Length: 370
Image 1 (cartoon, rainbow, N blue to C red):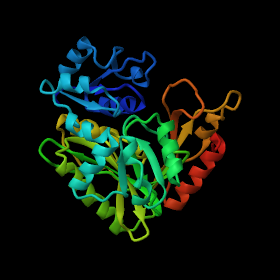
Image 2: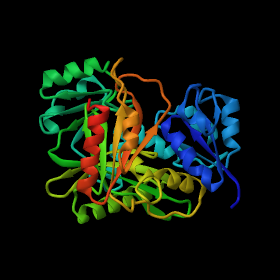
Image 3: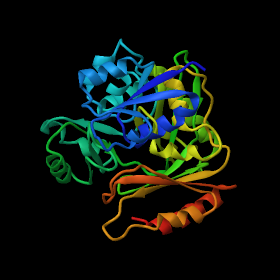
C-alpha cells in the first residue's frame, strides 16, 4: 500500500490509540500537541507546539489528511488548515459539535430528536425556561464542558438563576431531564465518496458525569440498534461528514432515541472495539480520514470496557492482578496520576453479555469503584 501520513490535532490517549491502529497499515502519524508529556508521544511524531503555531500547522498541512482527537481545538488552527489539507471531520462539523446550542439546532435540522432545551445567553432568557423544558433540567455551558464539568442540576427557578451565576453567566443550554431507560452510543464513519461504516450500539453507565463502563451488546432491542443507524446516517449525510463521529443517545421506554451529544471523533465508549475481534474504531477513523476502504466495526464477541480513573495517594490498585484474569486486557495511557483522571481502561471479552458483565464487575472490584 502507498505510504501515508495522518495529522492529528491533539495528542492525548485517543491520538495515541489512533496512531497505534494506523501503524500496521503503514500510516505514519504526526500530532500537534503542546503538552510535552502527551500520551501520543510514545508512538507518533509529536510537535510540542501550540495548536496555532505556524510551523506546527505547516507540518500538518503537509500530511495526507488531518483529523481531531478532541473538540476544543482553537478555530484559528482549523481555519489555518482549511483548503490546504483534507480536514476530516471538517471545520464545519467541529463548529457545530463544540457548541451545544448550535449542535442541537443542527441535529433537529437533520431530522434527529433531542431532549427539550432552551438557550440561556442573558438574564432575560431565565424566566420560564425551566417550565418550558419540563420543570427540572441540567444547565450546561455551551462550550468546553466534558466529563460532568460545566453543568449543574436545577429543579426550580431560583436554583436555575443561582446555577447560571455559578457558571459565571456564560452562554448555556438548559436541557430537560428525560426518563430514559439506558444511555447508548454509536460510532459512524463516512468516507470521501459517501460510503458508510457503523460501529456497535454500546450501552453506557455514567457516574458523576464520567463514563465508568460500556458494554456490547446493549440490552436494547434490535429495532433500536437499527433506529440508531438510521439517525446516524441522517446526521452524517445532513452535516456532510467525512471522517468518524460518535452519537450519544438517551433510549426511552417507548424505544425512541434522543440524541444527547455528538463527538466529532473516536469515543471512550468505543474503546471496547480494540479487543472484540473486529475492526477498531481507531483504525476506521484513520481509514475514513485518508479515504481508505471502510467496513462496519461491530465486535465479533461480546465485550465491555471499564475506565481506570486516578486514585488518592496511597490507594493505587493492583493493576498487575488484572493480567491474571482471562479475557481481560489492560490499556494504560502513560499519564500522571490525578484523582478522577482517566489513566487507562480495561477491556473484557467473553462469550455472552452476562459473562462480560461478570468480568467487568470483577475488574471494578480490583481497581476500586469510585
